[in-house]
Length: 289
Image (cartoon, rainbow, N blue to C red; front, side):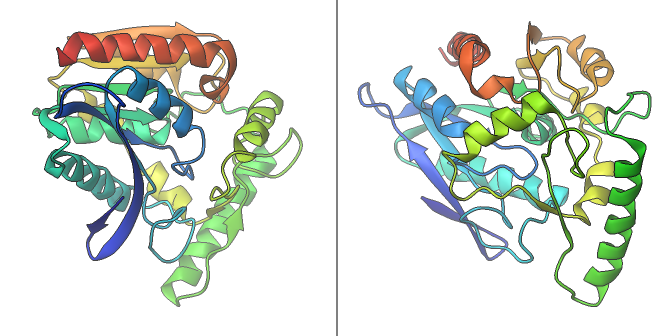
């Protein structure tokens, strides 16, 4: 499937349940940071589809099979427009009940799901998995100082280069401890390698200038405006998100807050995935009947 946002094509896949009356409920899935629709999402999409829901997964512009130049650029504003367009596309499909749509997001996509649902009360519910809710200066980063300084130096140079239309400077997203990368956890790196083997369109890199778009983003502030049921699923060993910001958001009305073991990528494989997806399907069922 594909839909157009501001004249550019977003590529997606629509999973439909094999049985059941049409139109059906739908889960629209938004990926995190540099993620693509084949990076960890098919397992979730298949399980939700087997439970009787349609599922729409898609690539943000600048990533995967979608259009957008330069490549590997995280532009929060454009990604939010992509999420809104994906929801509108799902509502336009004859197979889908426009009144029964759940917005699901993981990592940065969970922040997008919260932000979009704050201004779209017609959604049935929102699922925020391992949510990025903004940079928390109170949160101690596991990243070595030299890595952080190098990231900022490259990001500043890349912004200047972008002004004169130079190709982006790419930085690796995931690496082993001691390497230069945005995230450097041994467990996360091994999980990433497992997911990468099944995701031919994913690239372990982002444009360095993306860092400033992420630093300005504050989904936690919009969470107070969400009036629909919200499920927040966190991994207790996750170092890529601020647990303090998450806990502040989790105290709002109509919010369920679930904890799981593991790190930021544990949600995509193994027993954590099995429990998390089962809980999310049960939450969707309660709010889509």
